[in-house]
Image 1 (tube, rainbow, N blue to C red):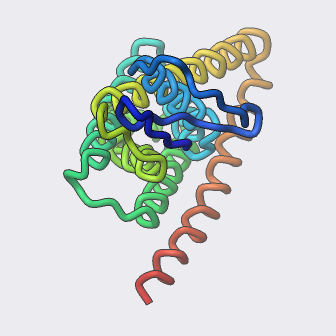
Image 2 (tube, rainbow, N blue to C red):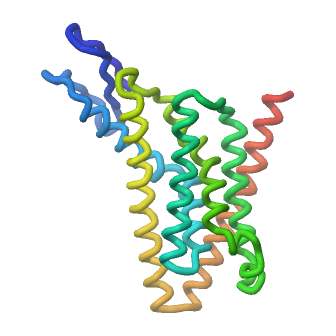
Length: 227
């Protein structure tokens, strides 16, 4: 994050990356550039965040229909938007180690749920109340998104705008990811149901194994901080 103060204006921010390491001070300064940058930040964060992508994939596999998927993803969006705003505006405290551990636990819970047979799933609470579970787990993931904003910072002159833009970026990245994965799974299921089942099982197995590792690793970090 590059900070610079024009002699006749307020503090400005710009983001430099490995692919865009040069910066030229513009003649005019507008709020639009800040919002655009935070939208890009939101998109990039969701697309490189393996834990969040695993969770969204789990919601996708859990949903039995497009309507159910829409309700579940919307509930997840509302949930993480709430805590993202509360932490970013410093209205609630934030403990990164506990947040990361909790995110891993949410993925593990959904992986276990997806490993159940269809009969068991229909009788289980998570299957019957997907939108409620997604909204509650969304609160946890929103804390993770907020951690990124705390590291980067929000422009003092446009906190609400940047926060809104970052959230919009997260949603855009999430929509793109869901559309691609849902489309591929749909085509795979239409072409070969047995292969689809193998792929689905492999995804659940990988998701469960990695989430267990994350729980152990991040749990050890919490113990280290406490002790």
